[in-house]
View 1 (cartoon, one colour):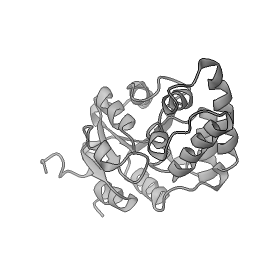
View 2 (cartoon, helix red, strand yellow):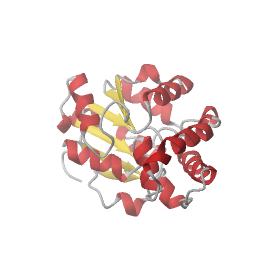
View 3 (cartoon, rainbow, N blue to C red):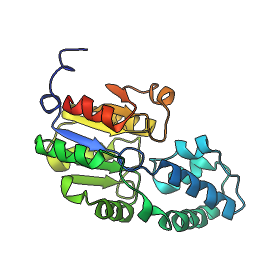
View 4 (tube, rainbow, N blue to C red):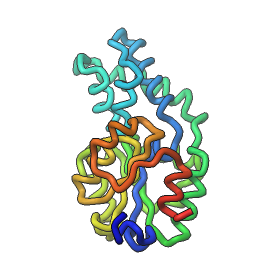
Length: 225
């Protein structure tokens, strides 16, 4: 481990940005099933679990088009509607990963700025923040329908601009290669968590300062506990 890596997290970073689905919220399986159900509703090829989960984290239209490459432009709107129908019938049952809220509170108490960069829509993220009671813990948030979708660096760069932070002092935490690539493109550091949408061997293809397999491991890395 480098001398930089041995420093407390608050001496290395000023801003910690979290992805939402699959990183803080235990929603990967639900999103995967909703993508598959939307395809089935419209008679489109149904992606397998790996294909459907791989697109999680992208903006919704981009994700659905990548999950079903043969979809026609005039079918995208209907697929978005069917996906939302299935997801909205289940999202109130979704919960944060065990220990996620406590980690956010701890980091906030350490004096770190916290943010979210997500492929969710603004309406969807606001609903999730309110349902989980985490809205007061974040200093800023950015959604895919407000700017470029991951892995474009815009979300991270806009958050840094809004909060007066440097990308070089920013840490992105996410469960997909889209998150890690976005961090690389923005000049930020990244941690990959392997309990979400993308497995460890896939995340390992992108630069990161750590790959961690649980919320407990993430807390230990960040807080030294």
